[in-house]
Length: 312
Image 1 (tube, rainbow, N blue to C red):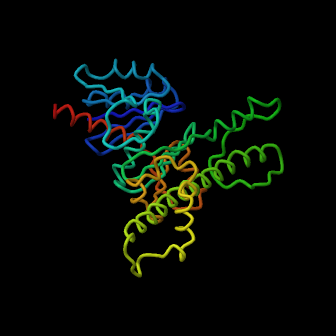
Image 2: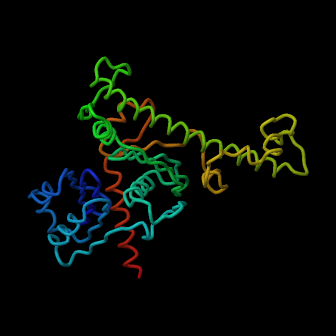
Image 3: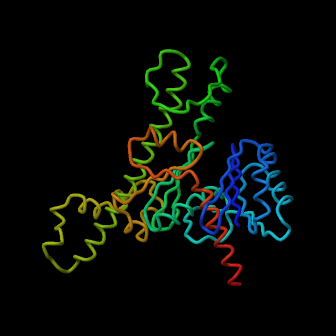
């Protein structure tokens, strides 16, 4: 049996796998909850391989290592580890292993699809994947962090508990409603706009790549499939000002290998994280809700490591 543990800033998630099948899952809010769970401890005796992603609590790692059988193999992953997909990212060592696992979990399910993977947890992390290549993303404060920030950095605003469900009126009639509106609606609008802007950038990259290929293929010949420069202002402008035809901060997303695999109707929105269900109910678009995405990704990482061991 495999054990995958995702030690985050707020919660500890654990999953027991039989190869690629998730049989048992746990979510603990504190280290004490984990150490006091008899069901969790009873399953440890069946574990042969463990994979740990830790961005917060080192004591959990030490505790797990003490409880599992001495024969069990433990992997504590880092961003420097080998993975089965491409990471096109500056300073890869700074990339969180939870983000790598989320990408791996999505690629295992959706393969070559273009995806925006949103991990709505302590922070909201946006991960963009094109043809099994992680090309970057964004990070912003999560729901709870926004509530806490307004309380801690002001003199009188109360610390509220995040609402669990339901839409919030944009125009609040009291301080509580104002705070809820600002945090929740602000987060929803942000996520919607981020998705729109990422999709626009990816589609612009695809369009730019298409026009360049059309021009290369039409050089030296004329046919009804080859547009004249005078009949397409966008192509003429791209020729006159090639840099202006590209998104200003497109990064690697505009490279040929990525752009040719992007189509507007193939961009999938994958949601995971502690607040994923909350956002899924409020976003006005189709999303793929995957609560166990990071655990699944960690297990794929573990299976990859096991295969590497057997091949060596």
